[in-house]
Image 1 (cartoon, rainbow, N blue to C red):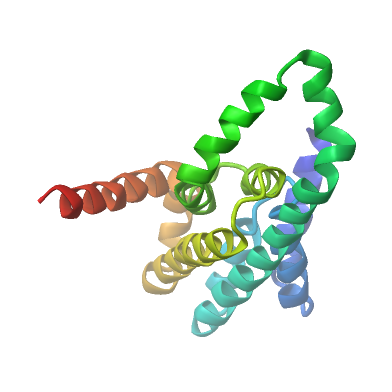
Image 2 (cartoon, rainbow, N blue to C red; image 1 turned 30 degrees about the vertical axis):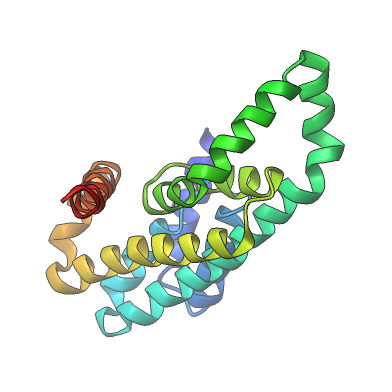
Length: 194
């Protein structure tokens, strides 16, 4: 845990440096496939330091995150037979995984969208999407919309309200995105059933 804290502190400090944008790209890319620290750690101080570049920062994080998501998808797609399948077969879970795949294909866009928008570890969903061979277009569109909404929402709040909103975002990011997701799903349900 100490190493994660040191890495977190280092990333916050690096957000003020001249290599902040390339580092944000790397963090956003790797977080979508294997890295444990979300890009928000860099987005927040970067936008606060340069509010006029908020959209550029959010855009870069979105692009890098989606590209990294495809890398995570590739891990799940190409690494499934080598790593996951033998484990599932050993424990006798291959049939249950087939059932899971059916659910994932039915609800995959919503799963990717929900995980991409919330603080849920996005890498889990990108790898799972590859493992079940979720349609690449569905995966990509859901990723672009969700990651874009998340990063642009954070950038917009910081651009509009500045430093006072930072503490609020850091404390409530999970709750805010879950509430937003529930409102969005409720809106779709209302449209469907009205």
